[in-house]
Length: 178
Image 1 (cartoon, one colour):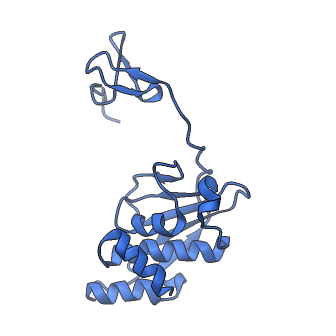
Image 2 (spheres, rainbow, N blue to C red):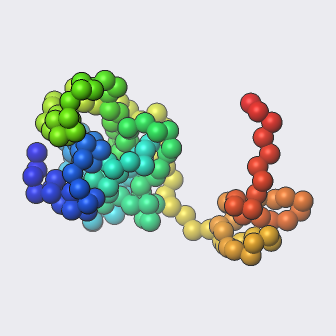
């Protein structure tokens, strides 16, 4: 384990915790599998899809340089402790999913964190191929003014209601149940 990198992740996140360890370990395993390509000069060439919005995402951001703002950190809200990493240039990808029951529920947070950071990768994560394609590059969209609240939203987020363009916040979704 790279203690200096771990300490940087802790500083960025604000504290040590098992959740941060999950993201740290996932990013480190991805580096081992895909090569040490996580650096600023690769900018948007490395993409991470995080299926959770938990502490580990901070470690992934710090280690990979992937951010929501650059469009190369995508949040896919499945709630799973899973991270997929892609390299645009080569099309390579890896999906790391934390194994359920990878550890004893009766251990302390400190012991859990240590286990996640130090146990063999195959005990903590399933290493799989991503089950989806590399996400598109970030795009710029024309802003459209909501005819209800007057706020601007990108055109792909607008909805049409009674002939008026409205933003998602002003849209009353219509669902019938299935």
